[in-house]
Image 1 (cartoon, rainbow, N blue to C red):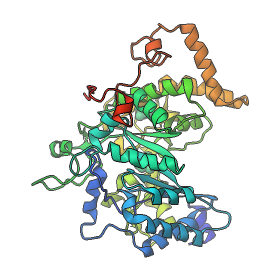
Image 2: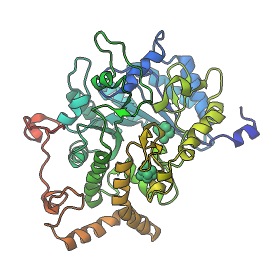
Image 3: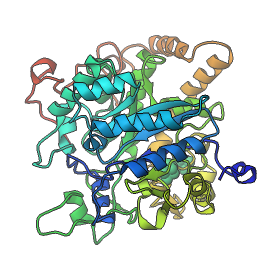
Image 4: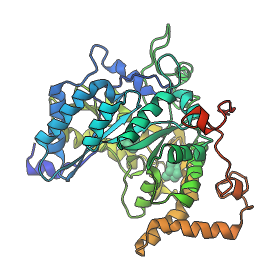
Length: 468
Ligand code: SF4
Ligand code: SF4
């Protein structure tokens, strides 16, 4: 495997997501189609064995020719594997790590099972923990439900408190869906002000369905009484009621951006904003907006390796790491084609788009709409991407110029403040809400309508939430 000629054709590094408990989860979020992936392995206990763990870590470290290696755990819910599994995983990393390799452990969790033991472990081994929260209580509890249909917010906040108590580095992973899409600013401020988040990532919820499956899909992806569970695949050009609207997604991001660019540049890292700025320097940090992809494979509990976490389905199975070294699978012609298709199948509309260099057509899984001239394969979120990149592009341009002149990109906040002063507080807010700036993204912005961490602290708990 380490033959020089073979290595020349392989990627120097990649970002593998390992699912040690498969897609098994201890909660039942309505929009989570990953739950249905259990059906791929109906006869198996969805737990990674020691032999698979050992093969995975050894091959991952062997495969990397760059010093930075990320060992990323997610699910399903990885805490279902128990702490001993990850203690062993860290020991296996130390066994195979080359002296020049720096390993960053990451761990995505719904937070429900986090306790002192978990957090002491995370802190000791410098884990970066991703916590899934969809915003304040009312918004989070719309879709992130337990098996009895009860909102999980309070339990997640208990996990968050534990992370904070032990000073574990965490980021917030927030889905943008039909319930929170109109509340970008409130959601972001909740993460920043109440959770003390320094890293935030927004992921659009897009659940595809066909004429045949849309009704069942609208009810969710978990087991339903008297109904055979649907197996989710990336097919169909309909979307569920929980799916974020394209323009609403763009507006949500703008709403966050207008808050961030006045107060938080260099202080809070919003993944898409970082990625957009980096694109000015020719670096594409996020597969979704990179010209090509294919360096983010997903590893199932039994060693099966798939092209991507979003394509864990039979036709995208690359092979099993017990039979073939993962580097060979990642560098295989099938996987290279998978990644290059992202660029090679761009519609004419994308090819001539003004924001193509930032957007690159988005993720292929979402390319099921028609372009303006009727060509299939347009991204469902196109209108939102365009809105966001057109709106923010000039500001990111200023940030890139500041950097090139030896200044901090955060200095852009002074430029934005000066422009605000020139326009005046009663001019329309630049976010496009139609409200006066002062009462929208300005200094007299109203407090959030949503309850805070504790219902007693954050505001009216009986607030009416418009989820429409
Ligand atoms: S298919 Fe989408 S999520 Fe998967 S690697 Fe490509 S761009 Fe990334
Ligand atoms: S904004 Fe739309 S047209 Fe432009 S690159 Fe993105 S998906 Fe393509």
